[in-house]
Figure 1 (cartoon, rainbow, N blue to C red):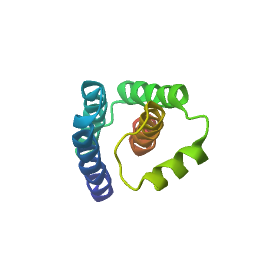
Figure 2 (spheres, rainbow, N blue to C red; figure 1 turned 120 degrees about the vertical axis):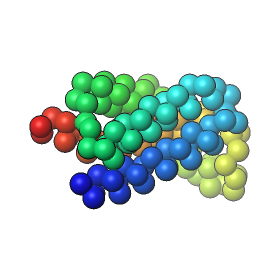
Figure 3 (spheres, rainbow, N blue to C red; figure 1 turned 180 degrees about the vertical axis):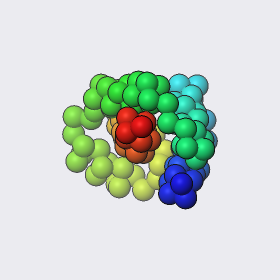
Figure 4 (spheres, rainbow, N blue to C red; figure 1 turned 60 degrees about the vertical axis):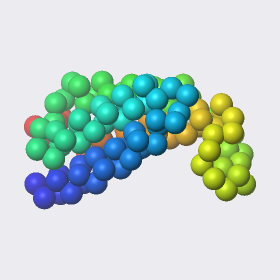
Length: 120
């Protein structure tokens, strides 16, 4: 149980930060909502509650969204990010690449909750 509290508590804080950073995004209502859903599942995980079907739906949607947004040139995108030396969005492609990895992060971070849900 201590693992649940630490793990999901850490992700709750990270997802709250990710949501905060989305307020200057071109579409904050979408991404703050997405991270908000992840925060809700982290809160449930802290309490030891793992709803099987909703978790499955959210993780599948995140993976499908990541596949949809998946960048054509990951290496080039990473090089561009390092070259600009700040986190401001310069192109729409950079934004979509970041969104891809945000969705993958949610799917991976919530995977232990899904495992626990299906194990019960």
